[in-house]
Image (cartoon, rainbow, N blue to C red; front, top):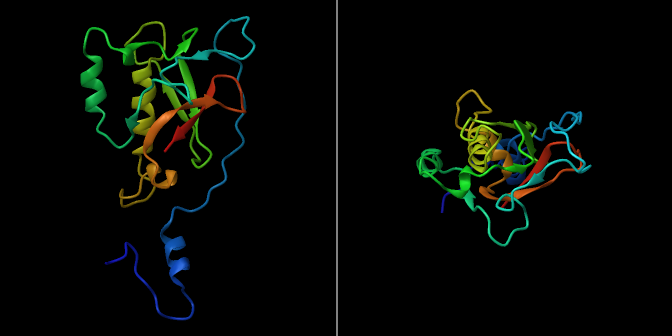
Amino acid sequence: ASLPFQEHHDTCHSVTETIQDQMPPALKRPQCIPLLSQHDSENENGANLHPLLLCPQREGVYWDLVQPEGRVERIVKERWHPLRDLATFPALPSMTVIHPWLLWPITVHASGMDSRGVTIADVLLAISRNLKIPVDDTGRRTRMSYLRGKQMFVGLTVSEIGGDVWELVVS
């Protein structure tokens, strides 16, 4: 069986070094500055996430992040679909999604699908599109490669940063 990397037989490079050379470089995330929540609420924890986006979940959205966005876009064209529901209560005009292995925060903006704020579909599409952005000049390696083969959206959890920031959970 052929390996997805070239094996070097000289004393300077081991197979492990070769694999590490082909992995995305380890990056340190810049310090995030928590912003004030975008809504007025007595809830000091900020907005509450829709149950379909929460992790862990009993019933939720299981989304392969490498699937074409057209699938979600076709689904949400239906008159009513749970993906058209607001992602948070109260509704937010935007929210941020982070992951410990990603250098880049993902900002989700309301698309206008619901005039009140960000929808579940907005969250899935923003994450999916963001992870497809190339990180090298060839365009072959994308931000998705930093998730180390994990491509299934499992949900979001409350981040330690606070505000309107959630952490992405993938499997």
